[in-house]
Each structure stands twice: as structure tokens, then as C-alpha cells.
Amino acid sequence: MTAIAIPRFRRPRPPLALVAGSAAVVWLVAWIVEAPAADWLAFSVLNLEHGSHAGEAVAFFLEDMPKVLLLLSGIVTVVTLIRGFFPPERIRPLLVGRGLVPGSFAAAGVGIITPFCSCSAVPLFIGFVEAGVPLGVTFAFLISSPMVNEVALVMLWGLFGPAIALAYMAAGLTVAIIGGLVIGRLRLERYVEDYVWKLQGTAAAPIEVHLTWANRLSDAWAYTQALVRKLLPYLVVGIGLGALIHGYAPTDLVAAVGGRSNPFAVPIVVLLAVPMYSNAAGTIPIVQALLGKGMPLGTTLAFMMAVTAISLPEFVILRRVMKLPLLAIFIGVVSTGIVAIGYLFNFVVS
Image 1 (cartoon, rainbow, N blue to C red):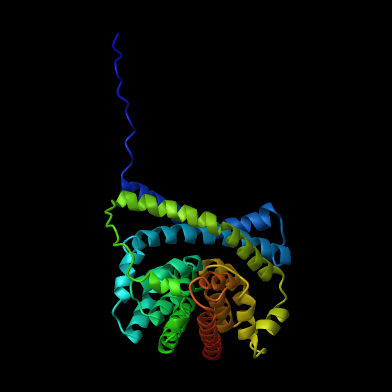
Image 2: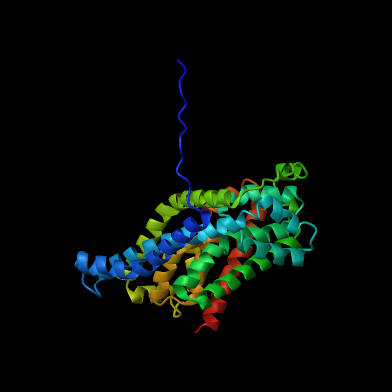
């Protein structure tokens, strides 16, 4: 007896525009209600007292945690969609064949729209050397990419306003461009590990892949979920530390260590940032708490840039591709630039 195949009917998928529009509406509603919901949870449900250390710390955490997660989930998805059109193999040709000065400016600008973290430093460094990108231009990109990225820029804009966001971008670009120019002028190619130069010219040609918008959206959302899971422990620690600073740190102590009255505040916070590891987005809750406690803008920006650009884990990673003299010069140039930017902003924004 012959079995009769019964056709299986699949439920049709909703239109892509409907899914994307619904997600945007849900995101917007969540963004609107998260702040009053945090206050309600802290002061009505938990019955904490307004103005108390515990109340302010808990309210800060309950408000900032969903706010940062919403910003990350929304912005990273959109940015990943855009970044899908600019993979590293398309970025490298934009920087090859340019002179040091225009190349450094171009590399620093491209670094803003390519938010690679320090864990990507080695493959990016090797990839740029393979493509023949000059060393100074490569460093301008390596400084700009982790230090200034569009996720942190939009988050700063949303949390603090355009003035601080643009100040952060200008400061990071300045450090990246000057760092690239200085390292390029010093002719330090001999301090790159020998095996890196042997790889030059051996890179395979990229394979062109054509993706539909549905594929791109699916890939962007999958990447966003993976990134949020990876960053979540750092965000919880960072926001928790920010909440403690916001609720418990004595204003006098903060002013003494990082305030204008301490002439060494900027280099001190830069040194404190070296053992830490985070991306720019992960430092924003701490930055918010420090600014709220009266730390000057320049000192706060110096801390934020130092955490992302001269952290100890990045030094360990970069040591795999460069010799100690080049690594030391890189650290010195970037640290000097960050300290100078910190003092400049403290002087200008009084």
C-alpha cells in the first residue's frame, strides 16, 4: 500500500518591514517608560528613601541597566547593518597608497565607524601590514577604533547631550591623528615582529558575498545578541560601580582626587585606568557617575579614553605583533595625548 504524502503548510513569515517596525516601536516604548519604572521600583516597591545613599544607588542601577541595554541593542543592530557593507577587506584599500598625513586623518575617521575592540588588534594590525598600509596610518586606526566608536558616541549623545558627545569624538580623533603622525615620522618599522612582515602580500583575495536584507537583519541581530551577552558582565560591574559612586562616594573625596584643585588629577586617572579593560560603551555608566559627582569633563574623558585605548590587556595582545620599544612608544604617545586632551578640556570647559 502506497503511503500518501500529506503536504505540510508552513505559517507565512510576517513582512520584514512589519517586524522591523514593530521592534522599533517596542524599543521606543521601553525607552520612554524605563526611567519612571526604575523610580517606581526603587522608591515604591522597594520602599527606599529619596535622597538616601542606598535609594540613589539602587535607582541609578535600575535606570541605567535597561537604558544601556536598550542603547546597545538598538544602536549595535543598526551599526552592524551599516558595517556589513564595510568589512575590513574593503577598509584596507581606502588607506593604501595615501601619504602619512591624509592617511592618518582617513584612518582615524574610518576608525569611528568600525568599532573593533582591543581583542581585534592583532588580526587588524597583521591585515593592514599585509595590505601595505603605512605603520603610522595603521596606528591611527588602531587608536581611533577602540577609543572612539559610534556606539559610545550615540550613547553619550543620548545620556549627556551633543556637547559632551562631540567633545569626546574630537578628543579621540585628535589623539589618534597625532599618535599616527608621530609614530609614522619616527620610522619604527624595525620594531614590528619579523613574522608580520613575512606575511605581507600573502593575503587571499576576499570572496564577494551578496546578502539579502533579511539575511543582513538576521545576522545583525545575532551579532547584537552575542555582543550583549559578552558585554553583560562588564556592564553589570561597570553600572554597579557607577551606582556605588553615585550613591555613596563622598563628593569631597571625588573632588580631592579628580577635581580641579588637584593639578595631577588627569595623569592619576589615566594610571588608574591602565589595569582596567572595557570598551567605550562599558565605561559610560562610570563616566555618568563621575560627572555627577563633580569631576571635570577633561579628567572624565581622559579616564574613559585611557580605559579603552591603553589598557593592560591590550598591551599583552599587541606584544604579539610588535617589539617592546614600539609598544613603549605607542603607550607613551597615546598616554601623552590623552593627558594633554584632559588638561585642555579642563582649561576650556571651566
